[in-house]
Image (cartoon, rainbow over the protein chains, first blue to last red):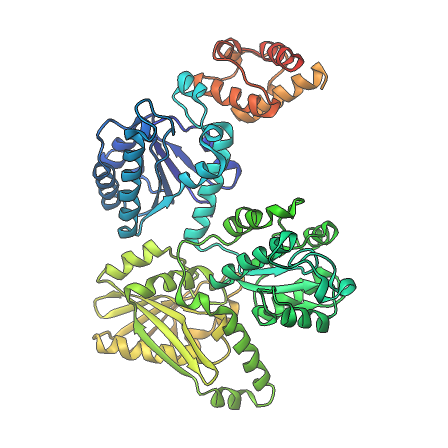
Length: 521
Length: 81
């Protein structure tokens, strides 16, 4: 479903509406000129009477009344959040015109810095408020590009045509980060992408990759990719080369920051790249729409765009000195936007490697013996403040073992956590190959002596090991201790969760209807 | 770009700005013919025209752009300078 958004400001920002609708937003409400306080505070306002997925609040600091305190703004937001239980506030940080009549640094600049410091501190305390870093766009593109006073004098507008487009895309990227709609796998070409030159012709000693000149372009690009991997993005390779030569280059080249083991399901061969991308998806058990493909060769990009339109294929910069900047602006922000990381993210590549080892062991045993000898331990725990991000992430990213397909933002999970009606559980997994951290979650809504399993989630990395049965047994015991006598649960089918359809009935639940199940304790 | 092409481009921009079908606009269309062409619509239209044609209208010129014909004449004058 399309997200809706309400726009509040102390200047006119109406042209943002059509740009947002062009890039995929549904209903857009534009509050009247300078009506932001009325909208946030009045019980009669549109945004208090109707919920929107997002609320954008943009205040131009030069138009704020003199001596305005950040507290007036944040307390209005707080009051809104109390009156309207749904929606996330995107608050733009402050960027005024950097020209001052008084002194070079001007009182206005001091005021702006102080406002921003307080605003960022405030946002860390309020999970339903996210900062939209407009100052980042102003620094990147310049105040004179983003603002045009002509429209101020004609119609109380300050943004330029360019600014509306940049701001709309920033809103879109932030909304994707909040909803966890990020790609999962970055598939990279090698020659003239991760290094300069053609490995097969020049040999690893002569590829362009060093601390100097053009070699540094590729070294820094590799560094950016390594940082992205730390945030939980899986790296893979799709390159027309000889695998032995590529392994040697990764091993022996002193300036190669990325190593062979940083990649999962690498495809270094002479097959068409679309076939290789499909086979990467099969091995990693992810959808084709989770892939982002980077290749300097336009013909390869066109092949993939035509054959696999679900794969995101960014253009490659003609000027390679722009590689690192392009990568962050055009790949990281649009495809892999994040607001938080979880502990599990940093170890994701190792988890995939361990899964591969498990698969190899599996082929030597019968299925039950395989499970037996893994020496699996699963534990359920009640949610804690530092595991709430991971629970939201599981609701957003899990597609296969996701029984009700209900997805929640971090802010929603935080609200459920503080409510006495909800019990949120996390499930940790370890076996003889290692500790996988939190791989599942069960969200339970309590009502007197009945507990309703709102959703039951298990990461695809833990599928096929029968841990879901042990988790459910542990949940049942925990609920029994709370005095619960009856458990209800629901299953809703989607594109990918059909294999989990029989889960509740297999566990002895009575089937009440197509979607509803129950059991007595 | 010929004068005819300029006119067609103006009509397309007006159609997308005011959310109407391009067939409802022609070379004689005026501000009073289009419901969404209010004062805010005027600024949205001007902003879009400036961006697509790579020109900048002065603050005095903008209130005088009240028909397809007036916009076309002004654009052609600016582009030929």
